Image (cartoon, rainbow, N blue to C red; front, side, top):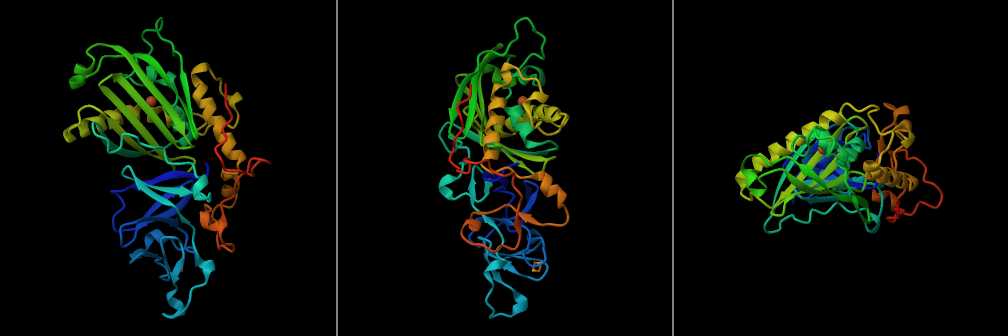
Length: 382
Ligand code: FES
Ligand SMILES: [Fe+2]
C-alpha cells in the first residue's frame, strides 16, 4: 500500500452530522463535517492518550475526543484542552495529522500523504460528470481481497470471456476466441488500452441498441495506485463509462466505489437496473478475487506466468515499483512487527512545515537514490 494518493473515504451521503471512523492503508481516520458542512479528515488517534476521535462528538468546527475532551480543528490543530482551564493556551505539538480533502462525484476523497499540492497525483477525472446526455450512478461495497488484485482484475482483458456471461461466451467458442490487439494509451499517472471483442446479444430493453451479438469496443486502464477506468461501447448510442475508486482498508479488505456514467436510459427510474447489472458483474469478479492465492500480488513477476494479455498488469506493477522507489510504499512488515505497541500516522503535508509530532509517521520502504522527486516519471514500457 502506498501513501501520496487520493483515497475515497466515504460517500457524501454517508457523511452527515456525526464523525465517521474510516480505515485505510491499515490506519484509522476520522472524517467529519464542520459547521459549514465542509468535510475534513484527520488521523483518528488523539495525541493525549490515544483516544479514538471518531468515537467523539463534533463541537462547532472541531471534533472532540471522547476521553478527556480535547478538541481538534479540521486541519488537526488542537484548539482546546479542558483540563488546563478555559484560558490556557494549547501547545503546538498536540497537533494530529490533517489531510487534504476533496468532495466530488458524490465521494469524500482524502489525500493520504505529505506531498505539497503541486506534486500530488490528481483524482481520476469523471469527464461526463454533470454533462448533458449523461447520467451517473454510484454504488459501493467491501470485498475480502487485496486492492492490487482488484485493480489488476479491472485491467485484464482475458477474464471477460470466462468470468462474465454478459461480456463473453465462457470459452464455448474456442476456435474463434483470442484476445485481439491491445491499442495502448498513456497518461501522466496511468496506462490503459482499447480492444474489440465479440459479445453476446444485449438483454431485455437494451436489445434495441444492438439486437444480436456483435463487436464490443472496450477500453480500460489504471490511474495511480487505486483508480481504474473502464469504458464499454456496445453500440454507438450505448456507452458506459465506469470509474472505480478503491480504498485499501488493509492487506485483506478493500472498499470499492463505482461511479458509472451512461448515455442511454437517462431517466432516474433506470438507475436501479444499472446498479443491479453492475453489481451482478462485480460479484462475478469478487468471487474470483477473494479466492486468489496468494491473496496479495507476488513481489516478483516470475512467480506467475505472464502472457501478452497481461501487458497492462505488468505496466501497473512497474508503476507501483516506481512509486516504491520514490519512498511511497508503506513497510507493512515493520507495521506488523510493532502491532499493538506503536500508533502510527500517515504523514500529512503539515509535517513538511513543522517538526515535533507526537505520533511516529508510518514506516516506509526506503526510496532508492535519485528517485525521491515526486514528479510523474513513468518510464516508457514496451
Ligand atoms: S485521549 Fe483524547 S483527550 Fe485524552
Ligand atoms: Fe470483470
